[in-house]
Length: 168
Image (tube, rainbow, N blue to C red; front, side, top):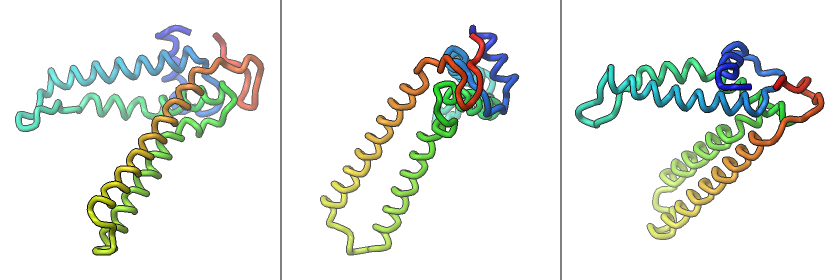
């Protein structure tokens, strides 16, 4: 499958989370998303300019583009996971773990504030916080590598629990 057929398939199956998507279909879609984001950011800079105080580009078109492609990106990711024989929700694993770690970090900070003077002294508290951040970082790196590994695996050549192999 080439670039344009993959984009057409992505939009044709806008919110189809069942079935399978081939490796080329997924990676051509990822390239489309990246190129679209770059183009929208450039157009935002041209049409809407930058904030004179912060120098940030207004992201009107980029935000609309990201909203438009959110569901098809999730759908093609789910179908790609299905194509490798894995449940589609595995595609959400990095996001779910990140959100869980953020809530744990927030809860830990709130607990430290509530404890008041019972928190370990400055250096020990900073060391614990640093160790926690390193642990979070390592979990994220492991998940990134695992996700890339799963998404780059060849398709199951035979029908699996999620359907017949996608057409090449």
